[in-house]
Length: 227
Image 1: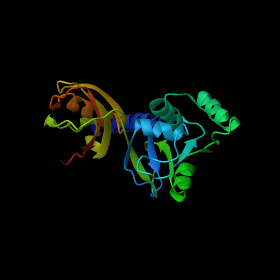
Image 2: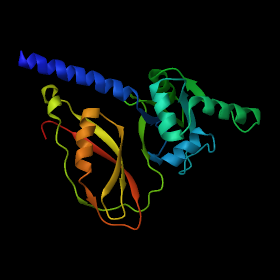
Image 3: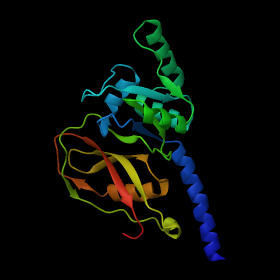
Image 4: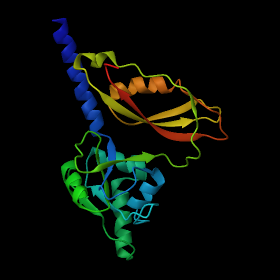
C-alpha cells in the first residue's frame, strides 16, 4: 500500500512538472546554423528583424509560434514584449517597407518540421518538445566578459521523490556571480522543476574567483540516480 501511495504521489508530481515544462521555451535551429550558443541580445535582434545573420555570418530566418505557453515564455524571457505589441511592431516594419512578416506556425511539431527543412531557420518550441532533425541553441545572458574560475563546486543531490522512477535529466540555470565570487541570483531556464530545486540549492553554494564586476553565465547540471 505504501509503495502504491508513493508511486501515485510521484505520478502527480510528474504531471505538475510536465505542465511547468510546457510553459517554458527552448531555441532550436536548422543544422546549417553554425552556432551552438548565441547571446540573448543577438537572439532579440534576429526576432525583431534588426539583423538577418548571426555574428559568424550565418544567414538566419526567425520562425515564430502563433500562440501557446512556449510562445508567451519566449516573448517574455527573450524579447521582453507581448504578442500584441510584437505584431504591431511587425506590421509597422511591413508598412514602411523595412521588413516582412516572419513565418508563424501553430504547433511545436510544425515548427520542428519547418526548421528542419529550412536553411538558416531559427525558432523555439516547448522545453519538452521532441526536436529530432534540428539543433538546440544555448542562449547566453548578454554582457559576459572573461570566464570566471570556479573555485568551490557542490554537486546537487538526486531528489528522493524521483528515486522510484529512476529518472535522469538535465537542468539549465542562468547564474549571476558577484564581484566577490559568490552566487547572487539564479534563474531556471529549463528542466524538471523538482530537479531544479536541488540544482539551485547546490549552485547557491558555489564560489568563483573574484572579478571586477558581476558576471552572468549558463550552467547545465545532469541528474542520474546511479551516479
